[in-house]
Length: 446
Image (cartoon, rainbow, N blue to C red):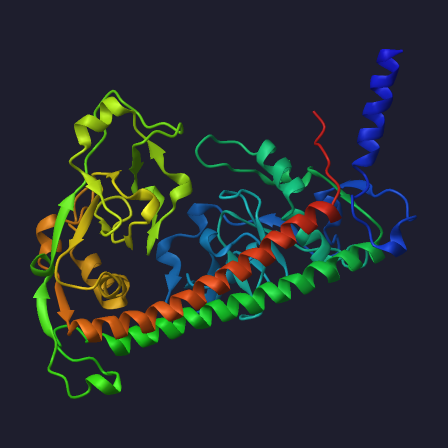
């Protein structure tokens, strides 16, 4: 009896997986979805409708040119987003030679490699054709039978992503081959229901795109304002001054160590490791830092016996920090929750003496300061930003009142950027939750 119940329960569980938890009213009685394979959605009338990019030996850096046919690199393939900021090209002759690896606007491209593996985005309508890199996969949908946007959304859903992750190989960076990918199962309804779901998700994506553009506009506005409010390299006056300071004296140009004290962090002693268990001694690493601050949720901790050995290398809520190894040039302020935390040896703290914290933070995160930081990195096997160079960074210093005015102006834009980022994150979270409701879960067969 017990075994029979278990089998019945299991069968019902499997059957429930062929229906989503949330269904539009007109499809409530439309029956179960059907299980297919990814390869089944391809357009068989189009040659190379499911194909990977060329072998590395067939497309080398020597094939790159300044203008021509754009190559889609791995870093262009975002998670449901095409990243347009990395551009390389090859000749039409090379693209013709690799015609089977060409891909066209509106088609789907997937990634063979993480992170995450199997992510997909749509090819933008900016060029007549593109050439895929070796880690790209072209997917052309049979739109007589399937909604392209539905399949694209399904590929990026958590359920299909879990199947890809489970099937992919590799420990540090996952990779999946075409044969494994094309045989992965997916569950689909009839075309009309596909289109209804696609319309719903595409409307949310339109909102996300609009909010993303607003965020980008705010960041561009801040960048342009910073270029106006801070003097150019080796100059002592900005292009733009607030009215009350237009007759004020020129700014001073002072080495950083004249207005601040810079001190390094400390490495964890050998034989000891950090822990997730919260103690009174948080330890801030470069991986916890981002431009502007520190992610308090990712910080690890050290036990008291280690803390005794590194307690002279702490940061204060009044300090700024700058990373000097690993990801170099991240500048931010220390949040109040991490007052008196221990600091990694790969970052230095900036103890303020005669300059405003917000003013200096804005300046050091600006374009000219970041270019100076990049040019100051040593070109060794392990690049590093030396303390001696940081101390000599020239900082334009106006009066305290003008510093405050500049800081307040830029901080007001930061508040708008934070609010816009939160709005965008809320939309993305809403879409993710909705997708979990609109798509049924399915397990791959063992």
